[in-house]
Image (cartoon, rainbow, N blue to C red; front, side, top):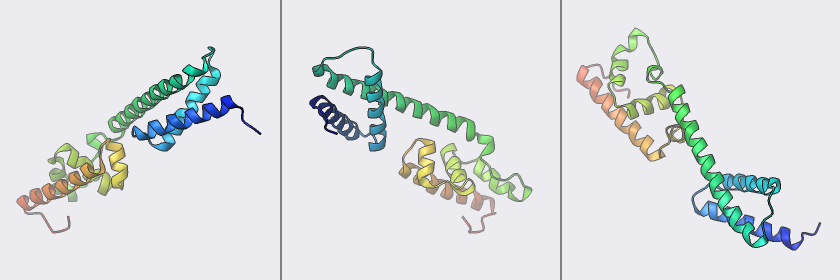
Length: 165
């Protein structure tokens, strides 16, 4: 099947839009999804644009669509954090054998407490934790490092540290 000049021009503009989105920091797969949505809107549109204005419309629609997706994903992460990682559910064990450890963990700053719980007790990877928390992997690693050190200091102060942290 041979493409006519109009189809070839649309494909060329589509490649430009994807390249622009990727250069702006959008993942290539997300950029392609956004562009697919742009083409669906173009096909469903009840208006007719002259060829000179379609390119600008595609850029504007792609940018707006990506912003909508970004806001939706951000809202999704906020809901995930609020609903699934409640402070009362962060502690792994309610048994009496771990009272000192539980008390020490509860005295940690929130970011460190969350990092330790997700990593050690929930089994998440650093990458998954960064995605859940909406922060960088290096911040998660620092929270883990500081959390372990603070926890060790607290347990040593209470005289219950056994060298297993």
